[in-house]
Image (cartoon, rainbow, N blue to C red; front, side, top):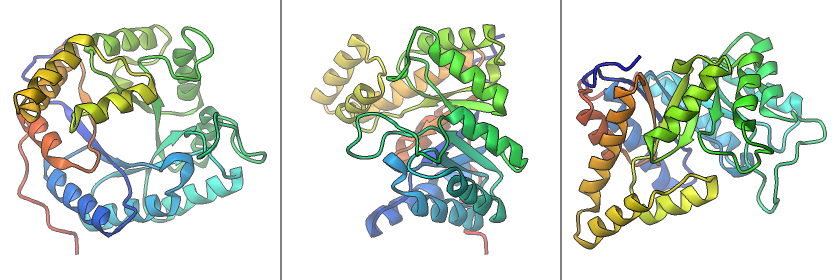
Length: 294
């Protein structure tokens, strides 16, 4: 049932691990800026093909230790044996990390499609089941409101998501989208398949660069509405792309909240300002800026 449009949602943020000095400063500035917004959790990604595995672990542990945030570590099936993957999971558990975002992962660089390691997990369903058997984690998974590029048939994404929940997933974070009706249709289909609607958390991309957002959308199969493309083009021409990005993202979130959404997951791209402005526009006020935990 739709909630009051004034009801503030629970929020979470996604970061990616740094691969250089400048990127490190940007990550920590982003965490420092967004931590006072009291997120339910924050997540830290893997690079394509698991290329930032060590960096991800270091960032996850540092964010938890230094800022006291609930951190969910991304973990994929790419280019690792089952034993290696579960060893990584155990290392997170040993460090006090209790949440994992379990994903199949993208194909390694140079590969056209994902192919499981000969001794690895064949799919995210298998990974979720193994993590659930450990009994140490809250397990979040990915979901695709629009067809995943590898989906074999209409409805495959819902069927696959249901298998992940049956294997032990507790919630799903969706790929970003620009039209809330796309999310609502997906949520309704998931609900009919036996997946509780409130377990599907929409992923939100505050648009830092419209050209960059369109490239990202093309890679992941997200639809770019013509009217939105035209509006961003006009805004850029008039020198107000930033203002339009804020208005567009805030409006999207408000429509989701009015439709009953209680949680929003923001893809920050390690750039905090627009995400923070959107969250504040939704009625979430920051606590006093958090100092690092001693």
